[in-house]
Length: 81
Length: 458
Image 1 (cartoon, each protein chain N blue to C red):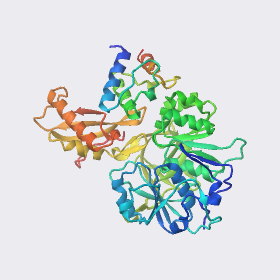
Image 2 (cartoon, helix red, strand yellow):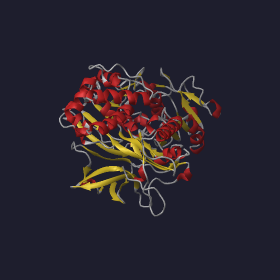
Image 3 (tube, one colour):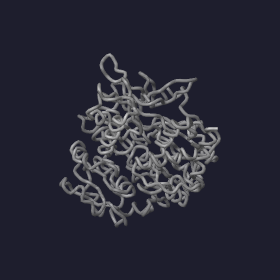
Image 4 (cartoon, chains in turn red, cyan):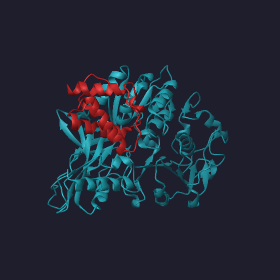
């Protein structure tokens, strides 16, 4: 499974567990407008660390925090490389 | 009598901006937000329980020096705790919003705090060094109430040098919590204005509002800042000063702030509701230099049994209720419960004593969650702990030992049912941030010779 499809899968899983409706995951979707709150992101980042073996938020050097969904995917793709 | 908050310098030309309403502070010189009831609140123990922060801010300014005691009530306080707070703090009047019915059954005088400012008495003389009572966050059951004085609360505030641009503070905190109150007091005691946060406002809207007010000094927890950094509106503000407190500031959030706000001075402060403001670090690095661990004037810091101890005139004095137990030990030190590790002449925070977990600034006691998990008939014992997390500082995870005969492979359909039932029970009685984000079935848990669960400090 690609990094992107893993992320989509986990986002939907976390949203359903937390009872949140998630916006369509278009590339330019702003993460803070996705329907996920801080707790959802926190859980998502932990699950992705288990699945992909990386936590780019902690490992990040010289990068900006992701703003859009495509930033987020790229954040993980770059870290997993 | 010491100077009250309303005597704190020139008010004209300064603003308090709320989301829906704002006030020129100078108006409070000539009028009142309390509908002519200020005198009736004199000498009383007043619970300040408004939904919005602007009304609370006005009440604090008007009542300091008049009331005997003010209890600052955050909007998210569960009403179930109200009667015990009222009893323990000897509350004999409540300041609230118009139309609130939540306090009717307490049978106490209610005073409405609202805009617009009505004409009132000028030059009111202070009659008390008012006690400021703050509620601790996230403890099990009823929050503890800790007593401060205005002098102690403002002890760490230095007089700002004269400046050309107006000084405009903003904070992501609620000003009725210690971290937010520090910013409120910095603004009011100094020469600044303040942009208040508002529950339910989106990060982008809040940042736009901060920008349109021209914010120069902005404070929040690392979790608040991470959300701001993930907003497309992060670039609309250009603060001169960025302050983090309330949680461990890691290198990643400090580096990101440096990159996004290259012209800002970035400081992370250590403060707690009980110990007051400890220190601030501005070198851009996580942790703090070991050289701070000493006596500096009135403030004395040391490490004992691995945790940070602070002796300071800015600390709270006593717990209200609880027989007035002192906050500090017999030598005047407050045990913060924050565990430290020394590496290369720098101290790093490694968690809290007793396994207490800090989630985005809210403290969580693991026992509260374990009690719910342990009610499930298949559970023998459980250990709830924090897992480090870059978004909220930590998330809750649980290790569970099942009873003999109950399967513990993690994959069997029976296990999945148990897991679902436990999570349902947790969701039914706990706020979402206390519900375990993951559950693991384990064969055993470490227990001390005294029979207690071994808790790491994470």
